[in-house]
Image 1 (cartoon, rainbow, N blue to C red):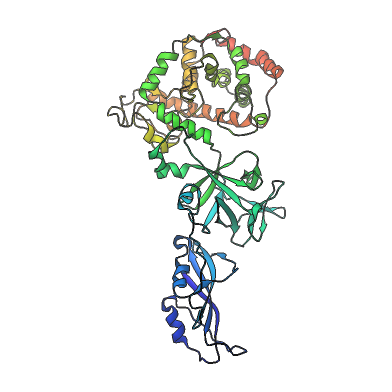
Image 2: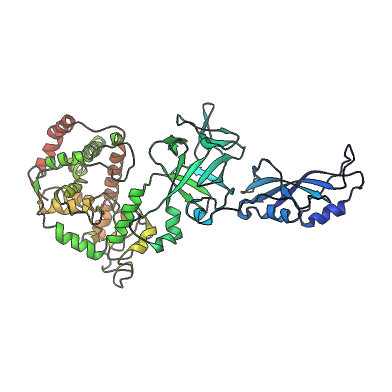
Length: 532
């Protein structure tokens, strides 16, 4: 805490009496300077003070001086300061009349707030409360604000405005504002509707299930998503390293350790899907899926027919955007294959890039292929079932949902496997690419074995990128690991390049097929009808 005395005066009937001033608050070490007023007044001492308090002890200093007879100045402007010590302070103007009938004037209660609402939706926790906060991009870089044609970074303070609303103020005292045309500026001196944002927490559950353990998990709550909606209905986000607004939700994550709000590419659909993956993908589930789908009795169609079916499937089920900007699965597959072709990969790698996500058409053949809304065909990161998951798996906060976590045989690093048993002997969680790996083997294609291994393992990023599961891999697997990682990087590049370019037309896809990919299919015995 810090208390700064601005000025004070005593009446003509009093001498400078520092002892009386010291008795007001000897612990604050504040001094009251004396000055002779220009006219007679009733005997009193008038002190004007600034209470500076850090964020960890919000309002404690204010309340302390209220008990001593001070009160917050009416219509006073609260300032926020950085004192080069890593803390942000709130500077509250206060005043006190000693010896008058206003010894204990009424004060404003800034703690009158519905605690349940704060618990669910407030970043600050108190009505009128504040916190210093960093606004970050998903890569951890601080966001910019365009100012006079240049980009500038600010230190921000988030202020709770009540009724689920918050505002953002720079430490220079200006507020963030979203104008009706969507322009984001920081030049307002007070908070009105355009400077206020509705704060919404997006739960990981869809509302159809109760998960008390998740509600109380700090790790899960720290990863939850939030939206910041302006008074115009648009959502605050980041574009080209600067704050912007869009009609589609952009999501933020709160880190209370670093006091930061980070804009994330994560979405509720993705979190809910991975949560379901952890909840469902057990040893028994994977074995049941193998038993059902590895009979390949759904359909017999060729790759070209499958690509035509993929024309009506969105490329990314997790992404929230305008449907016109989201390409079809067919477009994504062709563009990914073309990216491998451009870089100069072998033709069989281009073939694998073209078909790697075609397992999703199983949903067209089997209406019951989804389990309670869970779509196992989606392209997601893999993990090994039947042993304890490593710490670097995707969405580790959901590990407590793993059905096998209490199984004595499955909850050790080796689990049900022998050391260095080889990746081919492991059970991976059941996904579309895993299905496609077995489909190609069933149909006796002549794609090199290395290619089939790449198709199966490219989703196992915990292994080929983070060096997990090495105790289960054999020497041949370790030789293949850099090739698998390279294939994964190419798949991700192709996915990113497919966004924002629109869908490929039927003629373009047909020309690509006839001029290039059909020859590759024939070369590796994939041109005929395949059993699905």
